[in-house]
Image (cartoon, rainbow, N blue to C red):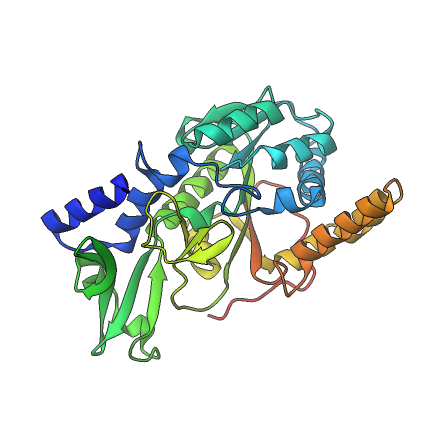
Length: 357
């Protein structure tokens, strides 16, 4: 018996169909039964594997990127690095190995108790917070690797030349998709999507917009930068809402609380939100181009010098997975923000991807 599924059924029976965003919020963040509250989502025994666990080079390259910023700032002591949704702590651990304790303030933003335990083991002196609002107000580097895709998305479908919201309904204890007119769907200006055909789907992530605005405000007021890596599109639309379990796609409605729910990140929208907050914007670029410009291939060659044949093979497979167009290289994008007084950020001059206006 899935207690969370029963809870969702009860809500629908009482109030009617709920938005995909509400379904995601309950399924992922319910304080007792939510996916991110109780499950170990990462690794071979989890539902997905992220870049820091695929190759140490990923974290080391970000460490080099941060070290460059720290040196340009004349090596300040009042400086912190914040990992948004820190996973196992592998990313900050790899970054710290590059920095060699030059930066002493590390912070994890997370709510998963199992992951927080691992983060404390990985970086014993790091601090933990649940909200960005609670961290010290000093110059900060924010890192978000597969962070933005976790937030609830609203989905809309074009029907009879108007927009209806895609919702979750219930029948005979089974959940299914339905469409209805909502306050949000009424606010969608048809002129913005005149060229879209009947049946087209668009997604809007209001929570991601809020996060980007909050981080932009933080770095503008306290000085700093933020960098985000995630799967998504630079200019497009469509249905990207999906469920992942045991590293495989699954019906997202099938098992609330036991399935990772996600959607692709709209990088054009992120850029538009940041532009409103008067911060510098770099990218978006593909992950492959960023890693290439930051010297990932050269780093691989250095590591291979002290590696045996088996280790060399693993290093090459890992980096290929991060950079190949057939793997994560093109699907994953990178965008960075910085305060106006901040030094220029590396990694975004080689073949910067353009956004259609």
